[in-house]
Image 1 (cartoon, helix red, strand yellow):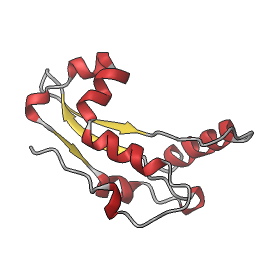
Image 2 (cartoon, helix red, strand yellow; image 1 turned 135 degrees about the vertical axis):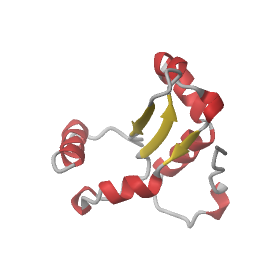
Image 3 (tube, one colour; image 1 turned 45 degrees about the horizontal axis):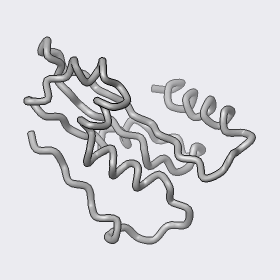
Length: 118
């Protein structure tokens, strides 16, 4: 399974205050390293020789709550563990350019929106 190569930053249309997209691209490009750094125990359970697959289309089909606005950093990744079982990893990063009083509430609502109907 071949690891997808994200588009270059220059290929993206300019976007006002788009802090999330570069992080999404970094997670895609360096997914094994991302997992090793932030989730070493999970990284150690994945059979990296079998590759991994980003399921962006599948994630979009499942998550269609328009009230939540743009969410670029949500990633769904199919991996195979060393024991042979397939697993899916859901990643959500929220990049903040400045402190936001309602941040915790927004994340709580976002989580509820993701899980309440799905």
